[in-house]
Image 1 (spheres, one colour):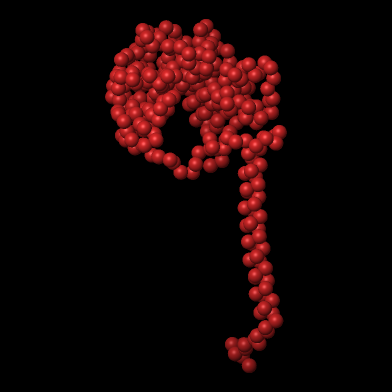
Image 2: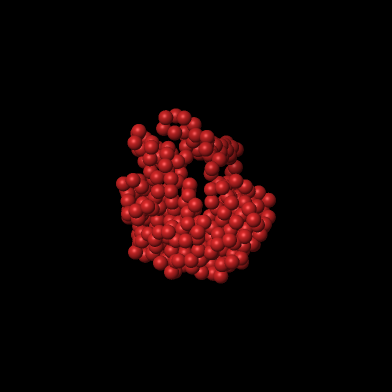
Length: 311
């Protein structure tokens, strides 16, 4: 008999055994997937508990996977957005030299502010939402009266190069602006005059953020550093050095987030730190072109944590 003509005799016992083995494998795979799912759920639940066992209830701040609404209207890149402190209004500043005012609940464009001649780099509402400040590469800062249909009532002149940021100083009628001319300027809103020039860095200053009490200013620069300066004296209090490229953005950690930060870096509060925490100047965050975000002890200038993207 040739090999081609050989037909093995079917054995029902071995056939059933093979089927049973494959069925067991499939069941085991399903069990593994189920256990992996339960493990992921348990890890997620564990992440909502602090070290003392108290369940956190602030998960709502995490963004959803899909946007609630898309606002479309600018003709070029958008440099900054700022929420109105009281109403569902959002201002956006664009390279197209305009500022657009949106109702973020409905998604409707309410108006377009035209006045700048070059890229608008930043925008900021004051604490009561009655004023809007904008700045631009055209070297001007413009003030808009929100309650009078966004009338442009003042233009502030003084910077000698592109203006990077503008912020109202809390509790005062003053503004702080930063520029490529390596200065931070403090402005009086009522008179539109520059009342102080602070030379905080030796290179382009990308942003200047005042503290809640209006005494300090946090700046970051192309010189790879962030610094905290006393506004009144102009004296640098702290330098934060550690990035390997220019620092694009810097913010003080808000008071509501400080307990979580202290938990992360294992620094429990004490009587002294609690007073500083209430001013929201204990910690700062910086973002750099070196692709990292750093968390700093802004009192001592020490880097406490470096966040690196794995994508």
